[in-house]
Amino acid sequence: MAAVGGRTDYRLQRASPRRDVKFVASLMSDEKKLICFVLVANISEGGAKLMRLENIDVPERFTMVLSTRTGLQRKCGVVWQSHEAIGVRFLTDGKSRRRLS
Figure (cartoon, one colour):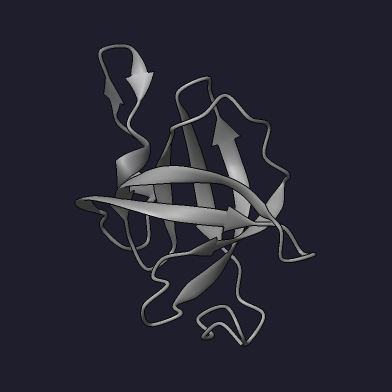
């Protein structure tokens, strides 16, 4: 694994490349209650980097609603987090790309 500036370059570990994006998504609990809004900074087939818009704790698993217009959502698991950002992987349960019902 390559090190950049003394730090490991995790981009080389990703199965699919991330695309830089900028859009707001909502995080929902399993009980379908709003946790908070985030800014999606980049996204790939396997995960995303979310920027916090509020200083709120998020659970280890949640549903990210990517579009209320189309109802696209993804089940997420937290891989890492800091005060500014959250790294998530998309969970595959057979329904992770489902529409809102």
